[in-house]
Length: 421
Image (cartoon, rainbow, N blue to C red):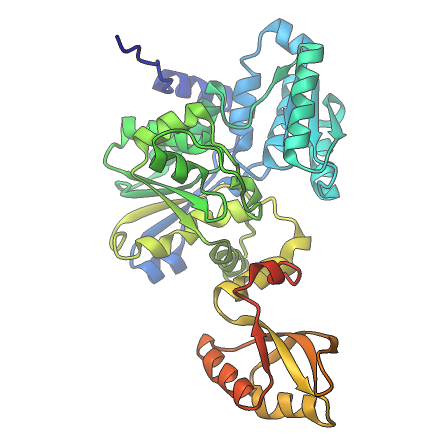
């Protein structure tokens, strides 16, 4: 006899109750039309601006709803969470508003700006503990604290009350939308938002297609749905830190497997392109996870023509010190930034010949490191070049080879390339 496992799905009554709890806590963020993206994709593109929350992300919805449901004993014992980003800030604000003492574990390398934000939102109700080098280290310490002092762990995504809190965003969207919604693109990390949002849409707008979007380097939900079981990845790329987890929540996987119409991945370089585009052309600052849904539009360009499309802009907690890396990744993705080993002949005028006769008039040298003589005739240098057009690459390589400057191309050699970018 087969025993069926009971699967949790958020009820609309629970989501509406969460919305009542959040009424004076979470902002009803605007649903705004992007004229530029609407024109580009010949459709009606709207942004749900969760980057405009007080804590600059949607995470306060789930954190507050969970903490508002705690028993008097749980409140007295206090709460614990582990996070290096948006969840920590949502928990900190919730601690202050609900007057609950909280301990927030963060990895030691967490940027000072993020620690200051958590302290600002939590004030006297939160304590930040820096431990270990990674999130896993901080998470292990947080779990140990829970066991030792009988505190309640506030999970960032794999929790019923957290899912119901995140789902309140969907209620707002359906209330705000003036036309039928054909597509919603939602960023997926641990799956709390996608599970909650998709459940509401399946109830109130079942014809809307819900597309989950993950970073290419952390396809945990995509892999799990493909495998038909929740699958932990061995290794992930952490650049899109707000949406990069090795394993999605078990609760969330079960819901998303049923509700999502598709799961797709987006290259981190494309995410960076969108971040720079939003900043330079629209004066909108987003974090990498906040750009995921917009970065996915290219893959659906034909399908969304003439349709009403919503992109969830999930957060704006971007560290300004990452700007150089964001620009670098965007240029690499656009095939405009290239790294080579150049063999310079050991004679006077070789560098001038390379600059004048081989580089194009619009090519820029952005990186130059002379290494050593490889033999009596040649000396090698690692050179980074920024091109005006991706079409200039092949002619450039041909000229290098013809004049015996070409040593190697590094962009497609990750073991070497990681030391440069």
